[in-house]
Length: 115
Length: 114
Image (cartoon, rainbow over all chains, first blue to last red; front, side, top):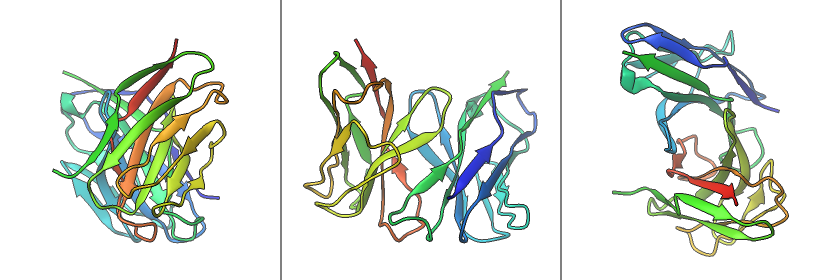
């Protein structure tokens, strides 16, 4: 079956530091890849996505590139802010997976940005 | 604005009691989902529904039940058979089962045992 592996947190860093959250996946087909963000006490919000190899998703200063050769979709941001403190989830959707638009999620990475 | 509304935000259950979590969407999405999130863990799929009057078990369906009588509503019942129901429950929807369009999430319901 499909799976997503994220680096374990928490990741603690200072404001304006560079953030990288690693995400690797296994999939039987050609998945679409997503990053979701969850702020405290809230649901998940889509941060960015990429639907095919070499696509780069970007939003709010975050970027991730779909690397088929390394089966990775690492999230990066060049200069984080305190407001970026949240839990970040990597996820994949694979058309070849069982019926339904089922997402496979990683375990989440908590990020804490200190002023 | 279109979105997903989950209620209540906090819910308390006594031992042996069934409780129902509400999920309503006005996005005109065909597919809806229920996830469970435990502290420090990812999301696990409980049930999903691709169309009205149809639903399928996810990875952890035991102790839960759902219905999909209307397109916009997908309530989840946590039954007394669920031995460890304390968790954060998230409802989501997407345009259709065949689309790689992202799922939209509600703000969740936190369920606790008294």
